[in-house]
Amino acid sequence: MDLDRIAVISDVHGNIWALQAVLDDVRRRGVEHIINLGDTVYGPLEPQATADALMPLDVYSVQGNEDRILAANSASSASPTLEYVLKSLTIHSREWLASQPATLVVEGALYLCHGTPRSDKMYLLEGMSEQGGFLNEPEVIQSHLDSVSQPVILCGHSHVPHTVRLPDGRLIVNPGSVGLQAYTDDAPVAHKMENGSPHARYAVLARARAGWMVEQIALPYEWDKAADAARRNGRPDWAAWLSSGRA
Ligand SMILES: [Mn+2]
Image 1: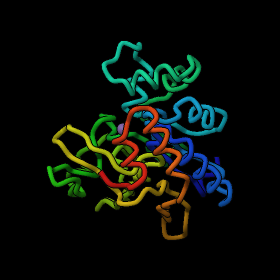
Image 2: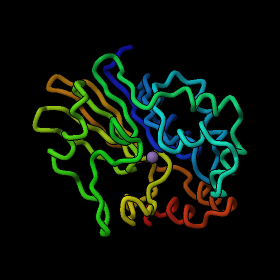
Image 3: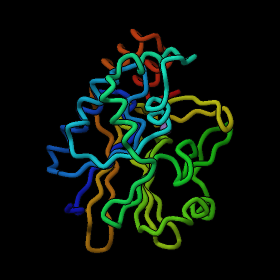
């Protein structure tokens, strides 16, 4: 493929309204290639419509931690949201999730993972304290990447956009999250992540003379519709995160 311009999406989390806005924007910009870093359908929104929108497209994809659970799981889950997603998805969509690898190298130049190369549940770029996320020291980031020889590493999972250059010259891009701009989690310590606005996030990478240009995009979309769906599906916490970008 012609790798000169690529849209990078991640963590759609079943938010079809945000995804459609992003796909429209990608088309409007004339960007032909899309990379998806996973956690595509999990959430109290529109998992099957999200899968339907992405499956026909020629997208390079890796599995997120939630995709892995959905691909493997039976419906005997304690989480009502997980049950809702499992009930919503067709067998075909589950097989599509199951077929995605944990990591992927594209055209020899781009290394894709959801979290870190070894874990889809660890943040590559962020450390975590009770006060929230902070940018990891280069040595910490580098220690996760000893097995990676590609010059560009694309990761997601934290929902926070970052463009990081390591001292060894490697470039790491986290495009943030298409579908969910804030959340709380209890591991590794209780923490919250928040981007401060409800805009859908994604990135466009373009080859420039001096290196890769990285455009981190914040796109308005109909977030009230996503919040309404979360409320209807029993998740007022998601509704608040979706409409404010605050947790
Ligand atoms: Mn994730």
